[in-house]
Every structure is written in structure tokens, then in C-alpha cells.
Length: 153
Image (cartoon, rainbow, N blue to C red):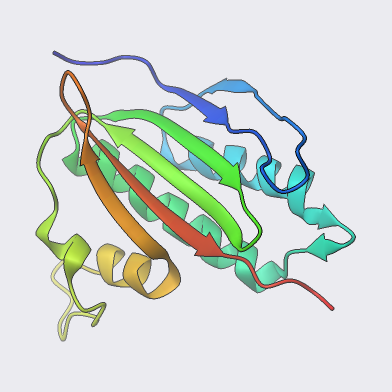
């Protein structure tokens, strides 16, 4: 069964106890990046914590790769969840495929030659931690990762 629910939910901020629940239709990697950036700006751009630009770029690269993989290999992007944590941002990307990508549990080594793809999972493995893949009831899967965010002093 194909799912067409392409809503992203910004999960409650578990650090400050605040809540930021917004529903945004997400159908592309670019839309996922824009949504995640908005959540980070809202929750990580004021003292006592402010994410470095490098950390945000790394986070958006992970978002791009996960969302593009959902579109390209996962039967479509079903949703994106963003949760702010003390360490960074937890992402959960939902797609329509039950197939667990073998590369998700690789070493993170970059391929020795470029064959049109193959850099995404090594980059995700290098930039994120706590990678988990769970099958969703009714089909599809959720890939979740924690992307640490370094903060400015």
C-alpha cells in the first residue's frame, strides 16, 4: 500500500520542555532541509546554545541524503520528524520500502571509485550516530539518526 502522508512533524523540544509541533507537507529533500533548518533556527539559535554553521551544514547533508534515499530507493518520502536533544538533533525519516539498506551498517569508508552513487551512507555514518532502522506497522520503514551539533562558545 502506498502512503501519501508526506507530513513532517517537529517534535517537542525535550531540552527546555517547550513544544514546537508544526505540520508541513514534505515531498522532496529540499523541503526536508528547509524544515529541519527552521527547527534548528528556532531551537538552537539563541543562548545558551547556538549551533555552529559547520554543524548545521553537516546536519543538512544528513537530511539531504536520508530524504533523497527515501525518494530514490524507499518508494517515496512519507514523513520527517525532527527532535531537538541536548546533544543535537534526532531525525526520523519514514519511507514506503521494507528494504533495509545494507550500506547503513557499513564502515563509513568512502568508495574508492565514483560510480554515480555510493557516497550517501558513508557520509551519514561519519556525521551521525545512533543509527536505527525499524520496520513500520503496515509497511515501510523509519531510519532514525542523531546528528550531534557543536555549539559556539
